Image (tube, rainbow, N blue to C red; front, top):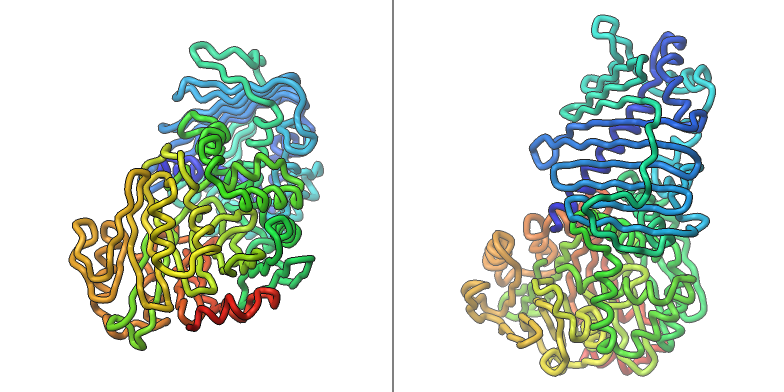
Length: 616
């Protein structure tokens, strides 16, 4: 399912890029009069000068080393109504919007989602002003909005010819942009042909046809939805997708101003976002939202709206319904203080509380590599715990990457390498020198237990020894299939864990295992396939020499995948950990690591007792 999801996202994104680039590159003709004639029919559309029109585009795009075709049709009928049709070999999507209702039809899945009534004033699909609502300042495409709304072909022609080195090829009757891109316009009817490398796009413009009824979908099962939810899902999903596809400097070079609020502080350490939170669960949740409002919204849009839309298109299931099903079974097992923190976070962010709860169980629906080495395996005998998170960089979670330093009153302080808007843990270390890393498995749908991320967080807050962590897993109701590495820097002990709802298996250092291979002395190594083979080979090769630098090398490509979202190397005995986060161009393994010290970052109210115990 995930590979098909990525295919949908890539096809849609690449088509958008090619068309927008084509619109931008139209304007580099030395003879301005020729360019004016080419631009006129298209400017009439983008500036709103034409009330009714239809645009048909057919693209052939290389994806995964093979050409794939996608057809897109858009018909605008008036300021309230349009049709959008997208057809690919693996999916088919039709959106009909009318003044009174909106439909999302997925014929390959036999379903149409239909919403009637009012819409959200901002997050809606009303054609009038739609481009401005979908293109935020978080994407580079925002710089094209003034051009798209221009009405004067002569002015626009002069601007564009000054920006782009486009040459007219009279012999071929087309424009050339560099060596690999070519554009040709037709006038009757208006059309545009674009060739860019191995990608080709044909666009034609015509008069809009007859509007079909919004609910006329023969043979499809109709599912009624709240129209506000339907249009918000699609509008926010597209808006966030454009930010992920073409991020502006707001995302690639974010503001690094440090800030403080009651019970919280935001610092930037060597380019990484670090949030220091302390107090009651309610106070911590509120400070989290106050410090990370924008980042948290991007996180929820990535998960709920962008990924959620792709999930719906590829499976036929409304994504929020899947989250609702999971949450209904998971919620009785979520610790009350975690629920209190999420509620305070939602209130601070002015989110619907239930939406915040749903987003925080997201990892339960989708299911990386890890190791712990110590004693004879390391250069100094210390325990080094590596954690590789390979998880969907394609949906832009890296924009919300945050290391949290958290001190809940009466509990063990801890570091949580996570994401704004999310209170659970998938990678963390506490002040008692306990470190944990999770690796997803299978078993979606086994949700009658404590969500994995809440169980991880509970261990960080409450467990002082490895035995306590192991006992927590044995005695807690568990969900799905997950693998873990748990470590204790005080005692140089570590275990690998294979957990399913029915049982828990602990793999000891040096233990031979049918899935993991022959045991390696003073080492626990977990991964899968060729990545496991490579990680085992590296640990064996550098056995006895592993330190912080070698530990980071152990997690480099190809042990880490292209989807590598973050890597962490814990040195729990020292209270130190090294974090690398992905950006929009590189997986985490190809990004610099930042050294952080939990003991130094803890707020003063954490008290010396919790910290000093880690050194004993």
